[in-house]
Length: 100
Image (cartoon, rainbow, N blue to C red; front, side, top):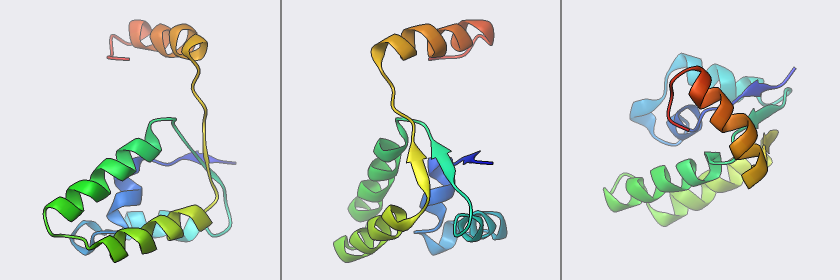
């Protein structure tokens, strides 16, 4: 059964000081199982990588290798249409008093 992959977990694989046994376990799990990610996930990952470059934590080559790794994993990014955002996301945000 697919599980939801958060960007913070994926980014932890890229930065040694953020790695943890839990994030490594999820990376191992992705070798055999699929994960799903929200539509914003690629943007969150890209933003974290760019910030890593800007702060000198990553070189462009590191970023390229990491994006290739991500591309090889079984991660399905869920599409988001305006209709779905207004119907589903807005409903859940209201229901639990969260931001959309």
